[in-house]
Structures are given as structure tokens and as C-alpha cells.
Length: 545
Image (cartoon, rainbow, N blue to C red):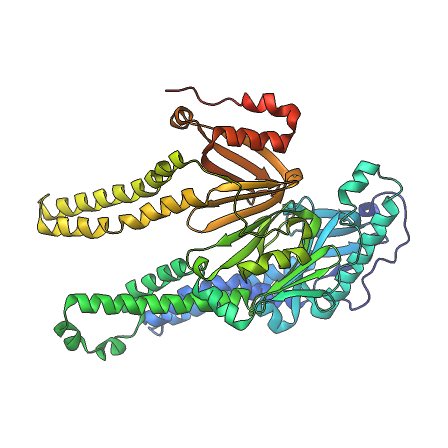
């Protein structure tokens, strides 16, 4: 790839840039061939390791066969990466970015500079090793409308981003005289300043090392890591060499009681799982920084796979403050955002972590600097709470699933022992039923935390699944508002409140069950305006059974 300044130099002309033969085409860095080949081969690493461990290599012709197959696959992967690199080209037209790609099915995509919403730079460990990054150009449409140049030299990527930001600002400025006032208002907030590099932007907050460790220790990654540890234990006899197992003092273990062995094993698994969760979180969120440059928020994080992304502030639709069970006693929370359009957070949709671990009393000051429109204290009490008669419904919903599970376990034990009433089944049942108060407390906590607060133009909605969630948004950003009720709710004068904000396919839909019907009507009337009060009260609800 050429190292010259990529800023467009072609004079403005009429017509589409696609048909302009004077465009200067650029290719990705040739290092993409090496990286692309290794990425295509990484799926063979685990099977090859298993073959080596199980000792199937080195037995006559089988070794030559494996080597031959591996060579053929490597050559094909290299040729595929070479063809992909050769057929991917991009060019800067006077008013748009043009990209041509495809080996068999040719594609040509055009992104007008004025429609560019964000310019993100990501680099995985392998890419960082060879000195290249991925540059992604996001548009309001998101998805396939976005363009990703997957191999750009690091210094060249900086020049590319600055050139695209300058071209975007120039294109929007030239369009100011041609758009209608309404259209100009829809994107005037996004127009503006060039995207600065993270080093030049204002640092709002960085994740410290103690906070990173606490984030890992209280993260939801413990569950997935437990599954990984369980799989390793299940297949450990096949992976670990026999000589290692022979060194374990099994005679001493047999002399201990079964309960001691079980407790020790559970403690070892818990500690290993906890350490893996911390390590996994550190790799993902290490070096997390939140910066602001004009009307853009800049995020970067990751120790190995370094991710950098840009979030236009005007595209943020809502802020979600999440307090998990482990973090709530320490008044710590995670701040997430819902964004309209584009792809954020590595393809997981239009939502992501604005800051993963922060004291609860520092949320509002950080939002005041990052997104002032949503600066509210998440610990503020809700002015409208759930009615007391809804408490038993929450407790029932939280415990009924657990009770059914206990019944299934007892029935399975009875069938296995060929006797329904045995000491073993009753002990197991009582042991499982002893956990029921935890679910009763969870149902009560869901009822206690549910509610909302409407102040002028801002709305706060609070609920709990396992973690306590607080939604902060504005009335103008609510896209859908309605209430529904099943026959049982209707008989009790309760409804389920539904609210939605624009968030593409990532979510943005929230529900609060068993709210007071009159309270929900007043909220919907306030959100929609007094003239819609009669229509809201006529929202169709299921007829009584």
C-alpha cells in the first residue's frame, strides 16, 4: 500500500464517482496475505494439537499423510488470501469513498463522506505483531453499509482517518446550503469537528489496575469459565499424559471421606474459575479509556486485541446503569449505552460498555462530561413504585421454576432407585428446598426495585432480573410506549409497561411487569401529550377469562 497522503485530490465533478476512470486505486497492505492465511488456518490448531497429544503422529505413513494434507490446506489458504488482497481496492472520489471487492462475485460499494458517522481502528494481537490495523468506516445504516479495510499500516491508518474526517466535514459544510432546515437539524450535531486521535482527545476516565481486577472478580464471565473448567476436567484423562496421573497420591485420597474430597474439588474448581474470569476480563478491558473529542466519544481497550471505536454522542439513545449482585454491596456499577444505527462493540449490535466498572456516586459526574443529556444520579429513588399486591406475583414467578426443578430431580432419583420414598430422595429434596429462600428474596427484590421517575424531559426506569438495572433516557428518544395485560393482570388492575428506544437489532426494548394500571396510563399520557390521553386509555387488553 502506498504511503502518500490519501486525502482526495481529484477536483469536484458532477456525476457518480463510480463511473469516473480517473480515480487512484489503493490496495491493502501486503501483510494481509500472511495474516489472512494464519487466520484461515487457526481452526486447525486444536485438531492438530489433539492428534499430537493422543500419539497418532509418527506411525509410518500416517505422518506423511498428515504433513501432506496440512501443506495442501496451507497453500490453498495462502492463495485465497492472495486473491482476496488482489481484488480488494478502494479509492477517494470527490464526494465519496469507493470500495471494490470480491473474488467470484464482484461488489462495489460507495459511501458518501457526508454519511460517515464514525471511523474506528482495531488491531488484534496478530495484526499488532506485523504492524497493521483494521480501519472501519461506519454509516448511519450500519451492517453491510459499513466498510472495513482490514490491513492498513498503523501510521497510514492515522492519515486515512484524518483525511476521511476532513472530507466528511468539508462535504457536510458544502451540503448546508442545499438541505432543508429539518434535514439539517437531524445531523447538525454530528457535523462538525474532525475526529482527533485518542492522544489528542480529553481523557474523561481510565480503568485503574485495582478496578480491572475487581471487574474480573465480579464479572459474569465466571459462568462461562466454569464450563471451560468442567470440560477440561471431563476430558483431562485424555489430554494429560498418563505419567502425570501416576504421580497423584490416589491412596491418600481414598482414605479421606467422600465429602472432604468433594468439597476440596469444588474449592479448586471455584478458585481456578475465578482466576480465569479475572484473566479473561483483563485481556478484554485492560487499558480501558474513555475520551471525548468534540461531539465524539472515543473508547479503547484490550491488552491483546486492542479495540478503538468512536461513538457519536448524538446517536446515543439511552444509558443503562447495571449493578450486579456481587457489585451492589460495594456500590459499583457498569455503564452501558444504547445507540441508534451503526455497528458498535465489535459487531454485537448498537450497544456496548461506556465504562465497565465505576463507583455509583461517580456515574452522574462522568455522564455530565461524556453525555450531558443523560446526566442523572442512578441512585435517585423512583417516584412511582410497584403496588404491594404485585409482590406475590414477583415471588411466585421467581420460585416456581426452582420448585419444578426440585420436583424433577426428586422424581428422577426415585426412578433411578426404583423407590419413590427413600432416605436418599428425601435428603436430596430437603437440601434443594433449603435454597428456596434465595429465590423468594430475589422475587421480593424485583418487586422492591421496580418503578420509574419522570422529571421534565428525562425518564428513569428501574427493574431487576438478577442485576439491578436503571435506564436513563429522554422522552423525545422513546420510540414505542404501550401497556399490555393478561387476564390475571387485568383482574388485579395490573399491566406490563413496554418502552423502546432506537437501537437497531441490539435491543432497546424494556418491560416492567405488574405495574399499577392507573400509574401506567398517567405515564403514557405524559410521554405522549395530553391530547393522546383518551387513546391511551383505550389500549386493547385481553378480555377476562
